[in-house]
View 1: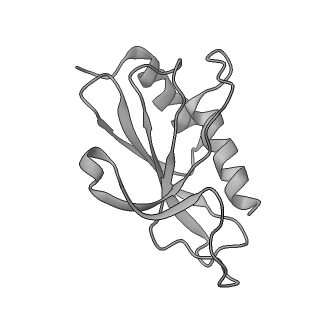
View 2 (view 1 turned 135 degrees about the vertical axis):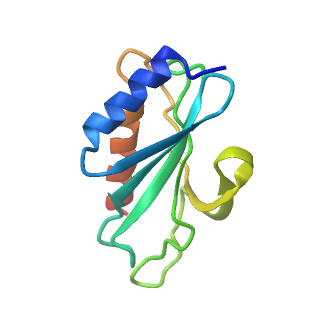
Length: 132
């Protein structure tokens, strides 16, 4: 099954919202898509100044949350401290878990499909990452 019209719109919104990044995607076969945006900034607390970020837009989007997000597997803090709450390192993502990553767990507890978009969620996740 090809990606749904809603997922196609989300991909266009991501391209528009992140014009300085490349966007690649792979259809999941059920109407959704795995998406990778790169580069994106990590924030001042991290040894790496930028990363790629990947996530799945589910076939049921926009009624379902875009969750979780994944970044480079070697993400590390400059101060040598653990990444902390909301992070899980060395986890597989993408189709079949084929890409190693650090998971960023930022679930949207109250989902409003009219205002919560894949691009808006990505911006929130990047703000959260920058504030660590």
